[in-house]
Image (cartoon, one colour):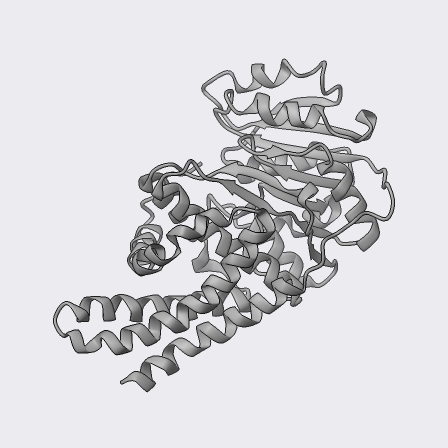
Length: 362
């Protein structure tokens, strides 16, 4: 029985170790020149009048010529004063435009922004993110020096200190580790629209493959489409100056809803490594959940359970610790063990909700 458990979990451990090794090889980017190109920053948002002043203030404080970037705020059918709030920053960000989404949803809003963009290099971020003053200059230099067509920027989550918030952070650290690890081994599987850069032409070439029928995934589907066509290099940007920071959900209900929305698009993935990750993860967490329940009826299962937990937790910890160290947020790891114990049940509940369609759209 132990050997069967090992055989089932080993593919997960091997794949995660491979991704971890990839993430360890990434070198920090240090610009060799001061690239100057016109950049279009797109912020697609709905009902974000409280958050917009912070991200727009950050953009107004960029160490980048103000005549070499524009900010396009796409108002996605807001019922508050999102558009009016954005326009208040016109004096601080001269090339600021606020446009209305002619469709509905974030995908349509991003498309609206891209079509309106003047720059050949486009950066996307979210209204609830914060960025440093070297964000634009760092990504611009990375783009010029690498020639990449799609660049995956690091996203750091800021915890409120609650268990729900730290739990969400630990999971997100694992996702960030997978994101940069798979990118480094030349098989990128994930990205995040909160910090994404791409050539406008690349977006237009792949616009028809973004699955408009699915409310989430404007970023992931663009990545997978670009990866399939192999017409442009895809790179991860490892630099503290390229980080976008956002807040974790502060309740478990919000965590569940966010994750269900993310997972809802997985059923149409065609990307090989993404499918592999999904399968080996599901088999591993399902086995762990079944063994946990079995322990309530027969304590003899403890040995098999510990073997499975060990084989899963070691690569998880290495990947999460490496990412936490790069973000200087190792404090969140205090909840690693409790998270490992409840994670299988959490994933099963999220998966059931996602595929049942019981999530709130953006």
